[in-house]
Image (cartoon, rainbow, N blue to C red):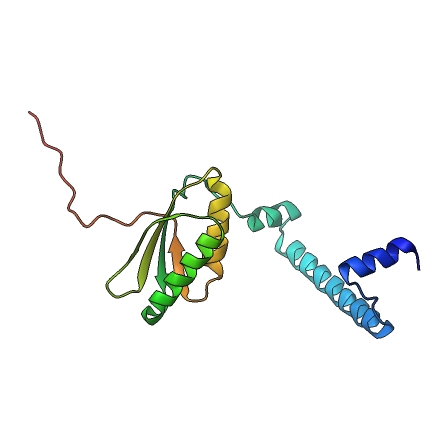
Length: 158
């Protein structure tokens, strides 16, 4: 065994695969290749090119959507306090500053307002990724809540 190979094994705690593990890996690799071929054949049958498939898979983030406001809706209002505390823990751990947090009377909807930092694009991606993976949420959006005060009509001057 070479000196460098031993050093990498020690540092990364690597273990070499046994013959059985290598055989299982090769079998899974062949299955994956077959599935990829089937996907390619299906997309060709549907008349889609690779460029069209790539365009559909891209996630478009509009920086103007995120201004620090996040409204979310829970599946079960019983979990309102637990979910709010979990979100607060995660956001403080990731370095976000919570300016305001409100819950509806029923507890089903909630609102967080975060201080927007230097890079709103990466912040919105982090928040979107975290909120999207929460199983308790049914939906969320980057928008401010509506005001309950009636809108003032502009005065008419003749």
